[in-house]
Image (cartoon, rainbow, N blue to C red; front, side, top):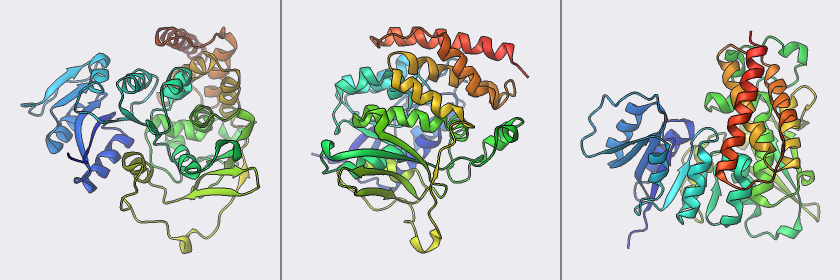
Length: 384
């Protein structure tokens, strides 16, 4: 029997997806790509399908163009139903969910229900639907790809949950660390997209600059590691050398360090429980120079506090918060909304939301739609 893991890569043309394919290239004796899904970069996906010999692909975006490259021998599906159908293919062992946005939740739930191992890079799956997903998973069937959660996961291997005092989630601070609200009043998308240490997609890069990304990660950590919010702490570590830490009841702290390259946490999620040869050059400790630590400024970067509030209140509020943030970030990138108004749009939507316990995908879809409509109305009223 072959020991090669057969994987489906959803969101194969984005930052995480392309780096996942690079890990596969480095380990062709251990990994095989059998299904691919993309949003709009259709030809890039078809090119990858031809390279890896993939026969099943799907295009998620309704407005995506038709492929211009030859698709002979490739079954091309269209729409989110066909994207989700890929995870049910019998030849798929492991699903890498690198879809952007709340659409990824459906695919995550389908992967878990199909008995597949889920390597998760889609934040919204847990932020929006953690109450639905976590009861259906084990630490062996849900492996986080995020550098922060992958770090915590590895620090907890072999440790007892009751001996954990708290989790330390590290943040780079983004490109605007140390700035005042007045200094952020006229920030442009180009400035916000210039992240100092990580190379990521546009939406997550903006979230990193507002610290919303860290707020989403706090909610994810709560679900992934069954940890109360008052025991999940955020610390700014500008060098991004420490990816997160776990503090134990005896005062000991385990820190996970490594090169700032997402291929390391991606590969760990694919290789678990093994470790394979490094996909990038290891961290050179003689070149770091220093490690700095600062508290997060939640007065200036209000999105972190808003996300924490949504997570602590629970129910459907994180879904509404996340939807509003997606709308606000898209509006900012389009030049329609001021940078500081991203947090205002999120707060406005949260205040209007009537919270309820999470019950189903259908309920969350309705909450998502209502929150987006509310946030769009806010954007229209505050458009630049």
